Image (cartoon, rainbow, N blue to C red; front, top):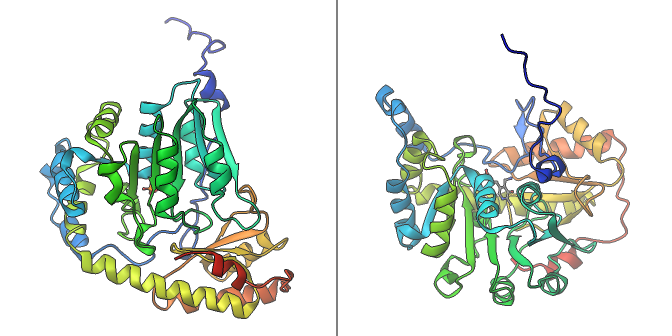
Length: 377
Ligand code: PMP
């Protein structure tokens, strides 16, 4: 038997050694899940019916992505060569970075935002440029545009953004795309259904635009891992090259095909989330909790130094929140997902009781209305 080779010299790429890791707190989530911005109810009933019909033989074959891509493209009024289905938007971000970033390139994001951008970009280049929002947490448009230069090859903007729920107007997004014709702009529309504004209709006239959508949120399919990218056939061609042909499993593809036929369900769910969001923001006003007015299915609350205590107290009451304090510019902020139906009063009652229990008092001398006026919905 040969001795195992020494691992002393075994090293991944330098950038892999340096890149950050993302470990979302997924353990022990048997509770009211107001922590991950998932659908907190269920996908369309058509999806469950479809899953029950999956046969053993179907599980034995490799998945074929294209038929589902044709359906999704038709549903969105696009050609099928403009759509790539991915293993969630997480994989979509990864594929874009693989296809478009050289080690000497720069990639531009605004912070705070979704952490997977940092991870996938840092895997390819040290040139991650972050433009930090000021204390209003609005998208820093002027400084963002000013950060574009000839080395910029990838720009990612989430609208609505996570964790803030802030939006970036269509006009601003197109201005960014036009200011960087040598870069691709990925607009992350993961929370599109709770807002309603999209740049999907601008693909034909904006050659460097990529739109990302997920089926993890309104569609309630987070566990199936399915998302999509829409762009020009040329861009999708490059992304297809770097993707595995089997990146999305066949159960997810089958379920997606029926899920997109049930527009009524998505409209119903999104409408209830918008109503719930108003109720949550109204209750926060009453409690004196400052928050960022959100266009998504969550609200970012400014709790202050007792943020950890609040999350722990809520967990004891069976309600999960997400502490966002470690996000840049978010010290003391906690995010609450908007639930559906009686989850909203349940969450709010727990919040009131928990704030009381931990001795929280309104400590910020400003009201939420000023920032609400500035924010467009
Ligand atoms: N983009 C944003 C802005 C998100 O918040 C999330 C999920 N937290 C994703 C993308 C990832 O979505 P998916 O489940 O499709 O990977």
